[in-house]
Length: 109
Ligand SMILES: [Cu+2]
Image (cartoon, rainbow, N blue to C red; front, side, top):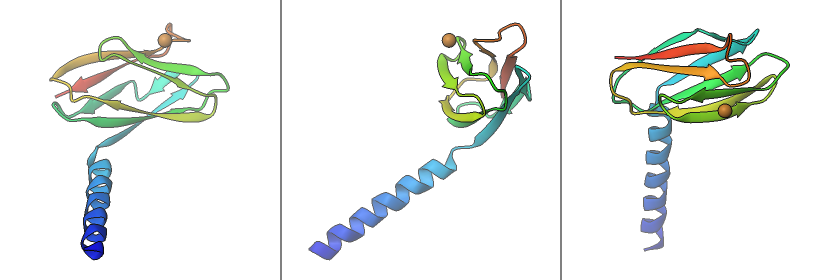
């Protein structure tokens, strides 16, 4: 009985690990208050992970009203944001602290 429970636990753990690594990951770099790249293509109806890497010496906030996310990214730091699943379309995002230059969009198709 004890052995059976341990096996069940191991199976759950393995399933969790597989699910996490199955999420497609994209990287966005913030440099000179701009997103690089400024356009990210990603699959429709799929949950994705975006790692936002801020290479500026000032904080930024990764934000989108189109897909409703807001995440602070520390100077020379990274933050992870889960997005979607989204329907096909174009979704804007911006850096809340430098909206004049930090603009980008997701092309979901
Ligand atoms: Cu904000």
